[in-house]
Amino acid sequence: GNSVTQMEGPVTLSEEAFLTINCTYTATGYPSLFWYVQYPGEGLQLLLKATKADDKGSNKGFEATYRKETTSFHLEKGSVQVSDSAVYFCALSLMTTDSWGKLQFGAGTQVVVTP
Amino acid sequence: AAGVIQSPRHLIKEKRETATLKCYPIPRHDTVYWYQQGPGQDPQFLISFYEKMQSDKGSIPDRFSAQQFSDYHSELNMSSLELGDSALYFCASSLDYRQNTEAFFGQGTRLTVV
Image 1 (cartoon, each protein chain N blue to C red):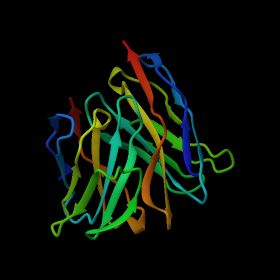
Image 2 (cartoon, rainbow over the protein chains, first blue to last red; image 1 turned 135 degrees about the vertical axis):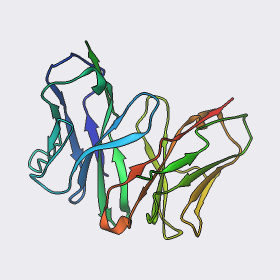
Image 3 (cartoon, rainbow over the protein chains, first blue to last red; image 1 turned 180 degrees about the horizontal axis):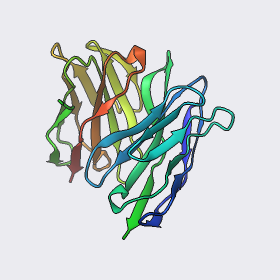
């Protein structure tokens, strides 16, 4: 089946530190890949996405590159802020007859940025 | 810009009661997805609708049912509630799921069963 594995949290960083959250996937086919962010008490917001191999998604200083050869979609940010504290979910979706666009999420990684 | 609206935002019910959650998709979006997120868990897909027809089904209990209406809003009906149904329920909408377009999420309904 399809699955997403991401590094466990919490990840605690100081402001302006470099952030990496690892994400790998297993899928039958060619999925689209996403990173969603969930701030405390709020819903899920799409952070970035990539729909094919070697695509790079980027938004708000975050980046992730779709690596088909390593089945990975690691999230990076060069200099985090306290406001980046949230839970980050890696997800995939497939357009197949048994997976019409529904999202398969990883377990989520909590990121805590301290001043 | 209009977003996905879910109501109510918070709901407290007793065991064995019934709950109805509503979702109003972004205008012109014809696909609705429901997800359940337990405490500290990742969101799990429940069910989806496209053009008022069920398009996919996930790990939705038989006690739950859902439908999409002619105005594209959707309702998730939950009966014989159990303590384990306490979770955050998200609705997401997209424009034509067959095109694998981006799904936009609502802020969720937090259901607490006591």
